[in-house]
Image (cartoon, rainbow, N blue to C red; front, side, top):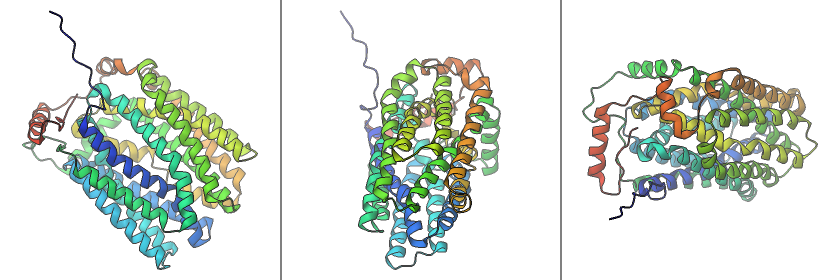
Length: 448
């Protein structure tokens, strides 16, 4: 008698993952339009590049202030409820922005306050969504799930730039309305999810907030590879984002239509999408260390060339080269770090890494706005290019990142290097019990 081996699990066959994905897709589409359009809205309302930079700085501070408390919330509260709250508060903030713009109350202070509130809200509540992913998707599919995320975000970005510019051409109210609808879609999709995503077992002993924070800090800083990646991300996030924002503001100040500027975002997103299509195979075939280092080096090299680009066509070509490696880089590194982090610490560890890696990002809009006003586009772009190059040097400097193997060997490598996640058996027992209560198509809250 011949027996047939059971089919390997796939993301498509996981209904809870599909519900999660729809919610994130709605949120990303609205956020992408808002992210592109909001600096231009601020420039239109205030008429000042410097003021636009200040609003961007205040917005970034909201992220930094909320990111660590958000990680703590994600590891102490049921994560589905946090995602529901994130969608509801997102609808509220965008509704307030629409009212402010419609009534002509869009002063520098008002726009800065709303930008701060929206980014703080997102930082406090938004981290729960990604923290859920390890409980929805089995470990073997994490790299593919991150590759899908990259492709989805790139596809959204392809449309969000031109769409945001077109909506802004219709009315200054249209981009925040689109972001409101995106938050509403995320809220409705999350309501359809059947699982319950507790970060720890229901009968787990209560812990103090400071103890939780200390545990995550010790866990993160004890691993040299995490410290190295934080350093790389710190420089690259500031440099690359600052460079792109400088290009956007410089072109806008020259009177180039927003829809045309959005084409550059589309080119970048199309390149990321191509990389995302190849990412699952690359993660399976190419060592993670290579996928992490090579795109950063390429990004730094191309970034140095952008200040010398003679026009939008050349800038678009540079964006395309920069974007190709981003999806494989993120799929490999994020999948690896999620794999080696315990379920109960996903929110805290992710928020701490995010705090460090994005710690200087609020300076990007401020430096871009002030730099354009005081020094001009060329010196400002060159400054951000040099910062990106420093991130590439950090990636090349240490051996820890270079040694990370292909995804199939993550587990054995992590154990050999003392990086493997040690899960609490009580969490695993509670997760399975929770999954059985939620229905046959709801996921057991998996741990590796």
